[in-house]
Structures are given as structure tokens and as C-alpha cells.
Length: 204
Length: 117
Image (tube, rainbow over all chains, first blue to last red; front, side, top):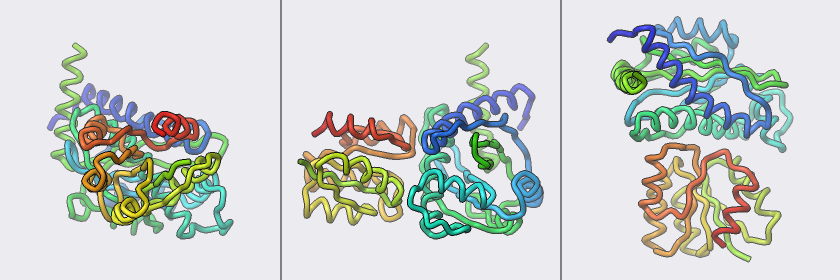
């Protein structure tokens, strides 16, 4: 599988469109402006992903993940540091307990936020591929970055190497930062690249 | 005054619905899953149902099919984070009255109530 600069460019553009749909949803929920960094595509080992996330967000993280299958299959992850997660819940949920850590109610709110963002993101990819992607129930985990990365699976197998599409976001006028990571297997990446190639041909 | 049933396994959207619907005089019924929704629908015959799709016990499209078996005239609006055109088409094929994406806002819900009640 050749990953030319042109294809990488096209993938970044597609991801950009998809994540802007997700950012719009986050902005609607928080009533704040959400800014995105340009998406990046990486080939990670498990340790590499852990080191990357630790460097970006810290040693302890909150992750909402949702498996999806259909036109493409993978695992979508919304990842934040615990303080960002807490602030996000406070922005959205008026009746939170005020505890300095995430309680059960907060986790439920984060699951729903994750569900909305990850569906918007991956659903846009489904629309671009003119297929259908089925979503599974989201899960939440609060853990050290390396334990969390060890827990990430794909197609029922622990993750060893994966293509990760990483988009960082910032909710303006708050201290909320985070990222969405889409973990794809090789087959799904190939399918996505077929669609990109078609998009590139249509452009010519 | 109508009976409106909200079906979602997450309490956040149910709370958001309630805060919008308390402005109206409608009666609000809540179900936190598909099985509860089917039981509540049978008992209460609500005038309008807002139904989520991805839920722990049953997928919303299966709930919709079941509700239409119980009552072919049931009025169900899908409220989901899934923004795919193909999912929307499936929902309409199964008899959904309308389809809105999360996050929803007050104006959207009031407009739907005005249109369908």
C-alpha cells in the first residue's frame, strides 16, 4: 500500500471535513468556539501511541471509545486529561455534584458527549464513502496513559501496530484540550484510500 | 395536551428534553432503553416518541419496527448522533416520521412539536 503525499493530503482533507462536523457538535454543546489543529496520520506501535498521548495530554487520561464496523471498521477514541473532562462536564451539565473528580453521573455525560462527537466524525466518513457504518455502545475509562493504551483493541485483538489519525482540539475560553484518535486496521485503511483515490480522480 | 415519550439510554439527552418540554403542557414519559419503551408505549400509547438509535439493550431501529407492529400509526422521531444519510434512509424506510441529529436545541424540538402534534 503506497501512501503518497497526495494521498496523505487527501486523507487529511477528508478527516478535516469529518472533524469539523464533530467540532460543530462540540461547539453546539458547549456554546463555545472550538478550534482544531490539522489532522495528522501516524503509524504507531502501542508504546509509541502511549508516549505520544502522554506528551500531548499527560500521564493520566480519560478516554471514551466506540467501535464501529461496516464500510470501514475501527475504534474511535475521544481522549482528554481529567481536568479537561471535568470542565467539559461542568459546561454541559448544570447539576453536577461539584466533586473534584469524575463521578458516575459525569461519566454518563462524557459517554454521551463522546457518542455525539465520535458519531459525527466517523459518520461523516461513512457519508463520504456512500456506505453505512454501524456504531457500538461507547465505553469510558479513566486510567494511566500506558494502561489505557494497553486496553485499546481492534477486531478483538490487543493493539500492536495501528494507523492512527489524530486531531487535536481546543475549546476556546476554557482550559479544555483533547484529541480524537481513529484506529484503523490495514483493510479499512485500504478501503478509505480507495475512496480517496476516487475523490482525487474526480478532481482531475 | 399530548403524551410524549423520550427513549434514550443516556440521562443527559433525557434531561435536555425535559427542560425543553417543561415549557409546554405536554406529559413526559421516559424510557431508558428499548424494552422499557415497548412496555411503556403499550401501556400509555403516547402521541409522539423521540427515539435514540444506539442503546444498550436494543437498537432503535428494532424498537421502531416493534412499535409499528404494536401500532402501525405510531409517530416516532429518531434523535441520534448518527449523521449518516444511509442510516436516515433506513429509519424512514422503517416508518420514522422524522430524523434529527444530536446535539439538538430547543427551537428544533419546539418546531417538531408544532409540526407533528
